[in-house]
Length: 188
Image: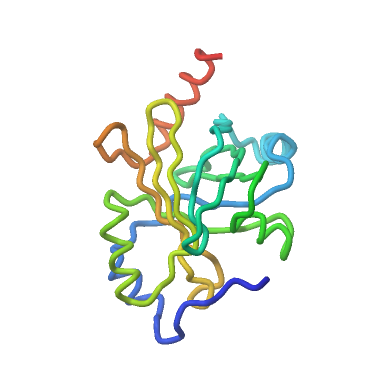
């Protein structure tokens, strides 16, 4: 199944300005086995520390329809950019579609934003479809995300990510990542 594309009249520069996108904060890849992929990236490129996250089953919406999905993902930094490896354990999401159609590899570019809903309103006004949207909760953090139909614009999905602790928007800088990794170790 081919992903639908944004209207051809939408161009990258006006979209970037309209959404007030910051620099790329995340590169997301879909994989069949997160543990195997983490071992590869650790051994080959020296990336780490890795935060392994396997939240309970949650509901997200895919093309406006509710979907029960369970994902396992791992996060690490290379400089200021977060690498996210995503494995689908259950459910039919954009990730499973990408794995089926293209195999493992690049899935999206992520941008950490302080007000997700404001940017989604701009997307709707410009006719850019929100393909998948959901919330992940882990260690007191709430991460709201939305994948935008931007394949026709730049050949890859764009993910908008809003991280908060309570109501405080916090982004996801590498220093916070290291704190969460340390908390996760203590919790085990």
